[in-house]
Image 1 (spheres, rainbow, N blue to C red):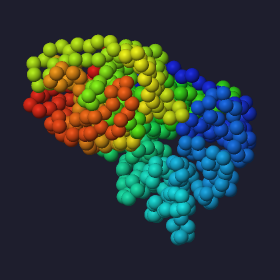
Image 2 (tube, rainbow, N blue to C red):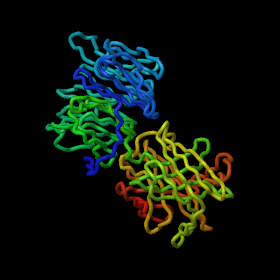
Image 3 (tube, rainbow, N blue to C red):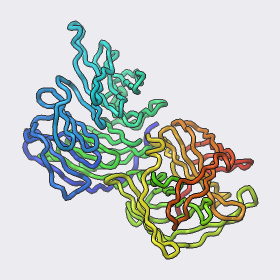
Image 4 (cartoon, helix red, strand yellow):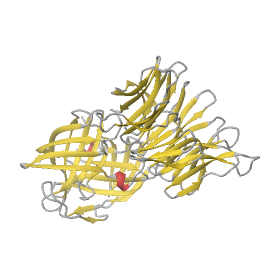
Length: 533
């Protein structure tokens, strides 16, 4: 199914990093984590720290005719004029491979590249290779051309001219998979966390495709060319060309948004790191390099947050449409689980401040009555993408100021792309207003917390985690209880005790991305997504 086009135009704060009016000069770009790189034809290779906008542009290499480059973190690899791969590690440059062709792809210290296979001079073709520290592995070995590799960790996607057209292949580190067998060419794959985006000729024009372990999905389905996709964290950017103009578009997993509205004559190069885009384009008589952060990057601040040194406490946050709802889960004065909440309109895209509430409610399993809340303090929250994803919050509680900095929990627990249905966030049954579930599904796992009330009407939470394969509709797990953790104003006193299954079993059947049925004990709940008022 295709994405849903958005009528709104993204508001980008665009920074121009380089420019030329010479018809003989052009740029190629690569974007790492907080580092923008580009090759300026006839002048060399340049770097700019996006994490420090006041930083000056630095030339890191004198190679002046580089057409192929790839970035990862603060590292950059490129093919020089001798067809050798050069790697800049943030300080120095070294040659890591010679006599390559086509494109390269860098992830960490791993590089995927293409070499000519000349063992049989009557049947010369190109093959995919993967270089890891101290090792070179031939990934493909056949009698047809394999090109355009994309690497993630030790996995590689590429296209091979298997029949009369190019098809998509994927090596998952152990097995080779052929993912397409279409009548048109499949080109320019982008691999990330085991998912792949690419462009496919549908007989009339090029469309953006997506695969994440299930069926091949059409992201676009229109009458214009959609080309050059880059996939990061379940989100894709690409170039749309209508024959007169070229602009950049974005798919957030659900909707399609136009990022630029410049009607570029030509977008020569594009890269994306999940939070920002870097591109080079011809605009009028000149050519430039441009950088912009995606201020509306979806769900970047939605999920579990924790301190790895203080397990058992943290935040559950959902940020959507300029609003936030969060729960701070900790323990009470006698070591039992408890939670506090806050929510409302964000101050800006990175910040929120508001009242912090405590709750009391009905004993779960008995007759429902509306819970009550009281303001117990204030909370100030700041989200940051640089130098890494963090959420820092301060609360004024009982006359004490508590400040915490948390990191994404699922990045450690279940690294991988978010479930494409984007079920991560707050869910509740309107018939039981005042309690709810926070779900975070990614990397083939789901972790959840159920916030409800115990026999003395005090707030409590249970957790559960188990496998949830991408696209699976049923989750089964146990509800675990935690005890012995720190109160909100107390120092951390060691890891709490987990009582596995103390809350019983839980099953969740997803009807769609916004509705699910839950069975806990002998009670069935009909959940829907919670919208912050």
